Length: 272
Image (cartoon, rainbow, N blue to C red; front, side):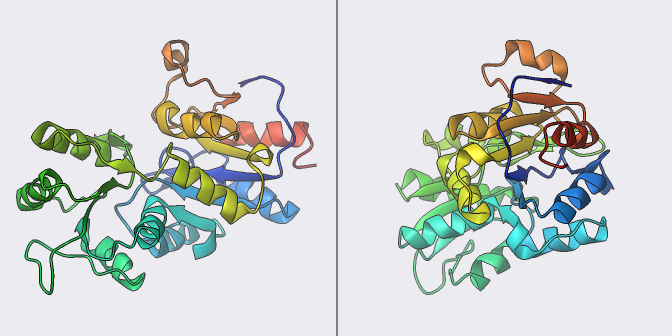
């Protein structure tokens, strides 16, 4: 574990895939650290870019893995995107998403449209990590993007880590659509400002009192550094230690896993 001098931490936010778990297995130290935070009354939040499933599904998944979680403790890039759409007065997005995620947007009061618009044309295009992606969805999205509709992506991750290796994610879909349309989306999730603002609001803390813990340099660490959080990189997911030398995104603290972070927090007095 390497670190610079770190300020006092009053709350933590954690990425999920590659940080807390990989596939259906908790990563080392995750259960013990979350239990210690809960016991000490230190506020924490799970903040994920992965928009392939609903927030409620994350609650069920974490609970099944033995981690205390409520819907309020889960912040997804879909949550941030829904808030943006509402604030912008956009109610009928063409939603490139799984049926489960589409249902979540409907439950939030939006009216996502499908391949055949019924009752009116879409007023925006929203690209998520759609694991049910089809060519027909891509073609319709490209037509609407070229037509100039507001275009939003939940997050820029190129791949999603899995136990069998990385798989194409929302950022890879956006790259394909850029080549077809010449337009890039407005990003809602890490490292963009909307996700950082939502983390501060959920934790009720200033940025300087929050540690953000994740496994990616270009999303997790970049957001933390850009928005004043303590940037903690765990080497349990995408980033290898040898990647650090070539990166402009420099974490404040590097740990092998969450067990090492737990030890660091005890040593620095966050967890006495």
